[in-house]
Image 1 (cartoon, rainbow, N blue to C red):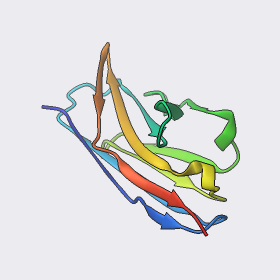
Image 2 (tube, rainbow, N blue to C red; image 1 turned 180 degrees about the vertical axis):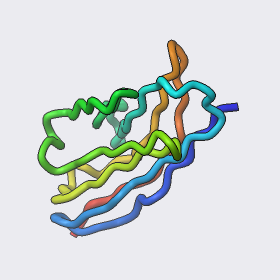
Image 3 (cartoon, rainbow, N blue to C red; image 1 turned 60 degrees about the vertical axis):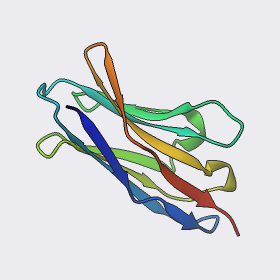
Length: 115
């Protein structure tokens, strides 16, 4: 079965950096998209960034220039480098893998940005 495991969340002061990682297992296809979503308290889950199997990334405007996604297809991992973090980036971050029409989610990792 497909399983996604995130790591790397934590607490950081504004302006700091964190790196999130997601390891996918059980995906037999090489052609799948991945992405990071986040959900802040009282808000809907929103897309942060997605990356296609061909490596094309699409960022939400609020993180452009601060966040960077990278994918290692050989190891089935995707990472999210988050720089210049702001309090409004505080949320639970979820990894997503989209294989054909099926979506698989990780359990989420908390990111807290606070002074």
